[in-house]
Length: 190
Image (cartoon, rainbow, N blue to C red; front, side, top):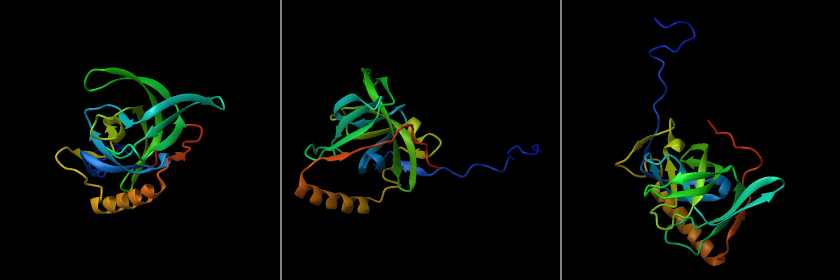
């Protein structure tokens, strides 16, 4: 018999939602509404494709400015972004190459789930996905089915949104400047 105040044998946590090895996600504070992500439990940290990465100081805080091409094989559409620099971290890639990368904290959204994650910035041009969500980002939040894709992503809605964005951006052909993250670390949302 469990002691009063301790969890009983029958008070298990609710089951975690199931996601596929790839999902459409949003990084709302960065203005990236639809980006295809690889969910990689073999990678510890998350990584976002970024180019023209520049660290600078603003109001006694370190910040990082970078460009993102959110869609694979499309370098014409670019977003110019800024975020607080949390730290620079030595990361060893899957091929064994070590690189010092800037780290930012930003909310991520998959379907109706939103929480804050640490993301390293690096050039992922040769990789298949612009965003890699490592195991630290999904731990204790989801079960990952490595044999299935887009379990929480509605591909039909995503395709329609993507087409609308391509049409609008094709007419404008300009980058977007979006300030991100106020001082301090964002708190995860439940």
